[in-house]
Image (cartoon, rainbow, N blue to C red):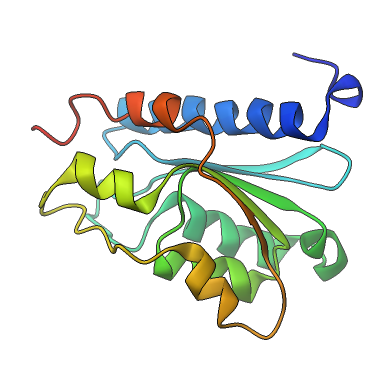
Length: 166
């Protein structure tokens, strides 16, 4: 593991974003869709990891970011969340962006854009992607949520190779 104290902010973002790709690959091995999210505090401490939870119940609301936001706002104090960063393998959808907003998480960094995800998934019935940028959802709120992304988009897309053709 890299010494996070020696990384620049952009190197740290890339480090944790790549961690979400690992979590997303883990989701595939558990029979789920390839999405992962991690929450990191202001000092760079990993607080929560969450993968997509669609299976076994076929819960379409069990996106990695939504599951993480629920766990975060029920276990972590408001001040920590306001200064935390949620890293996501793909841009949070409108539902997840709403959950992140309501949890009070202050920053989001994502890999794959919602637009590019839609190109990859096509009209797959298990992922009817909303082409609505998370910035639009956050921008309609009363408090600021910083957003960075897409980053490492080709690496993020590679995690989805062959998944949506099934």
